[in-house]
Image (cartoon, rainbow, N blue to C red; front, top):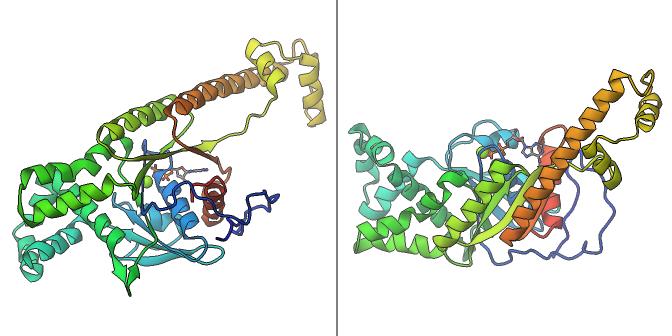
Length: 352
Ligand SMILES: Nc1ncnc2c1ncn2[C@@H]1O[C@H](COP(=O)(O)OP(=O)(O)O)[C@@H](O)[C@H]1O
Ligand SMILES: [Mg+2]
């Protein structure tokens, strides 16, 4: 297997690690990677980076978006995506990422067609407002359609082989993920026999099988970490397989251990602070009274507090006992080059 590569535009060359030359994914054999997380933690970004990392080495991956925000198109610098699967990016050493924004209405016609062969009649149902009924009045129906589409993409075959080596789902946020993935269990309970029952059961079987994992994206902040813990518990109760925890947007500590401790206690050496400022070309007066030095000490103290809190959050995440991966905060935001870099980071850490 080929190694992870750092060839995205803007990526810096790295010292080769002994692992380069092998590809040792923690999730070998997984076909569906579901990515959830508290809103704004980077679900879409991580999904795209993961799809790219999984494509590395000549594979084909499909990145599915179900929230209808065209976030994937924006991330890949593309215009709005048409319905259907379009090639989005190429991995550095070959491998294709396709993207599919799933539209519930379109999925509804496919569903009708599959079970009732109502393709054309379905269009007139639309005029009667049936689609609105199905997707608005019965919100669970929407999730049935979206998960059904994902199921179809995972299983699809083309020329005797799998159409996609892996599917990555940019899924609903932590607050809704268990319900979203579990909707087919409800359907199977409601429709006790027949094709709808069979389809719902097959989808549940796939979601609960070792072919599927649900990764959770978090920041080193209290709320997202709390939601991560809650979601691990909720998914476990629902017998849905929890995958890895992706700690996104991390920042390296700026001070060493001793300085952090001094900053916390407010005992940073003022003469050293003054010398540091002077070295940076900033004029300072008497170290004991200069406001710039006091300001710098206050900032150092805030930084130390944050580092301290982040350590606590890290410890909480460790108790969850799932593989964790870290992605640094890219200072200039996530452009296409940044996305390749994040993909490479995930690959190097064994996520793909
Ligand atoms: N590692 C990162 N470094 C810098 N910015 C990031 C990183 N990950 C995500 N972002 C930015 O954070 C914002 C939210 O990310 P997004 O993937 O859209 O989150 P979500 O899908 O969870 O709402 C976006 O502006 C994205 O570019
Ligand atoms: Mg998103």
